[in-house]
Amino acid sequence: GKEPFYNPFDLPIVLQDKVIDRATGQIVYDTDGHNGYLGDTFFANGVPWPFKTVGDRKYRLRILDGSNARIYRLRILSEADFIRSQQVGLGADELAARAKPFLQIGKDSWMWSAPLPRTSVVLAMANRADLIVDFGALVADIPPEAGPQVFYLVNTMPQFDGRGPKGKLDDGGDPRVLPLPFDVPGKPLVELDRPIALIKFVVERETVEFKQAHPDATVQAGRALMPDRQRIPDEDVVAVREFVFERGKGAWQINGRFYDPTIANAAPQIATTGKPAGRDLAEEWILRNGGGGWWHPIHIHLESHQLVSYEKDFAADAVIGPIDAVPVRPPINPVDVTDQIPRTEVIANHDTTILGPNTVARIRMRFRT
Image (cartoon, rainbow, N blue to C red):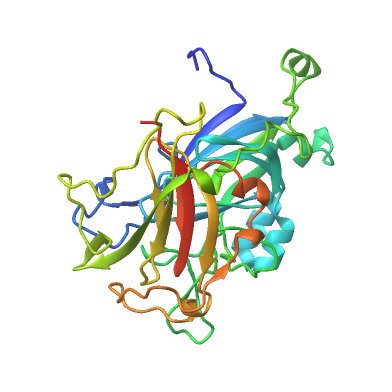
């Protein structure tokens, strides 16, 4: 807490799940595995199931999914709702109704142009979410004499293997993959009826003097944070490349090839003379999920990208083949769901795109280095 930019109301949080050997207390990990790693113990900043005492004010939570293969849907529940969920279970509709509101102001390394009201956020591996949680608003209707109030950050995403989230079928057959790696309107959610607690927040009332000395943040829904990002126009795109992510021989391939550090699979151009200042040459990349029910978080180092479109073959979700499924391309019946994603998120800069099952994402980016 002594670094120059330390802010007690700005909390970096790394979420992870690990397998712990009960006899030795050591982490168990298969260094040769290619099927994803799911843990049975959840950690936040290296501590299993921690608690954090906070004041009745806004806090900024910068959350990173540091897990190997787990995708989270994060919600905030009151202590009473969390206990009830563990005792009798809560359906998806009831969970959504009882989840506490917060604001999302950014994703990955970039702030959004405006806060987006949320009651949940989906994080894939290496994804980051920048959230504002107003604990003061959460306890506003509770009299101070009731004492400290407890809230839980929980995970409600069902996931049973390293391929990605799935929902159980009523007939006990193979689980069906979940539809989208986004929270979008009009789509029924599949959620754990007994959410997994990740962090316990204990809200204590601040004194008037403390609040005067440390004013609360002013961020709120409807108030712009920065200008909209400028979209990369068609005329700036000088190359289109396709990358198919698929399984082969029990491991991972891109365009049918294993990783080889001696080969350059693409050599994007950078700014040249004659282009207006700041208008670097851009490329459009087609990121295609090769099948098998796997979710792929596609991270591109050093540069940000913009989402152009996100297409999904919903019909293909009904069929989940073996882990090493034969790639199916192109999708049989792709549907562009970009307009279902909040505009604030679509126009923002990203560095990680969640490539869900049976999906194709188009992204554009400029290269400066």
